Amino acid sequence: MTRRRFTRPTALVAALATALLALSTMSGATAPAGTHGSSGGHHPGGGDKPTIVLVHGAFADSSGWAAVTERLTDRGYPVLAFSNPLRGPTSDSEYLRLFLDTIEGPIVLVGHSYGGAVITNAATGDPDVEALVYVAGLALAEGETVAEANELGGGHTDVIDHLVLRPYPGAPEGDADAYIDPTWFPGNFAQDVPRDEAEFMAVSQRPATLSSLVTPSGPAAWEDIPSWYIVAKYDRIIPPQAERAMAERAGSTTVELKSSHAAMVSQPGAVTRVILDAARN
Image (cartoon, rainbow, N blue to C red; front, side, top):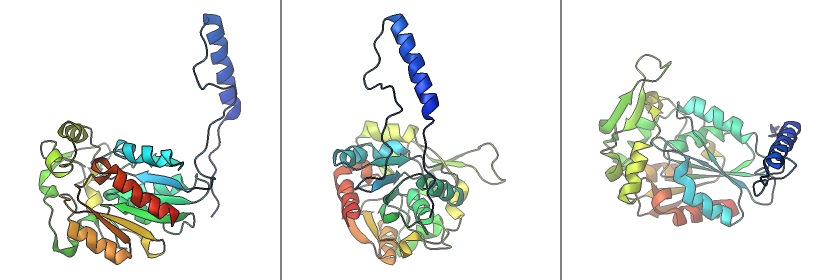
């Protein structure tokens, strides 16, 4: 596969840097710490260690990976926390696939919750994705929907009963943005996260389209790529029974944590250890 390399507009950057330095000289100010005359910077990927790409799920955003990111970067791993559009498995997976094409070198792809469905489709056929890590994630089979996967293993979730629907521009007839009712969110999405943090997660959540629940998955990358799976034993969003069934079906190396659905927030150390195991193996 030919990679689309990320390139920086070096001439433009140099011109802007020169202009900023000129302005700072005129005003008597000093250049900010870390400012250099060249474009500089480090492009993730291309080193000895794989790039870890973290994909959040529905009702969340990339900030949920903050503590995991800190631990991974402390160990020298390049990390990118992908902003999942949450518009549906088909388009979200294609967007992630294009995003991965800009990364040089091996990749470990990590998906939480609905983010698991996205990495399952995006990594298919990509030889640079060396491992998949599901954090209470949806490791869908081809043709399976999110709603169907939630019923695997005989578990139950009543999250559907607590969704708040809001219109969004250009929505197909019958579709809408779905949020978890903020009053219900802390005790069910993140019951082991400090209350004030969980309440902020509730009011800052990003919605997913309602149609995401019933869109069939494409071919599953876990059929060809080694996978690791973190089962959240006290998950009230995706039933733990369903998580175990998906992990077994995918042949994943499985770890169970005594955590809520938000395992990467409440137990970032344990989640990081699983990602490191995938990266090293």
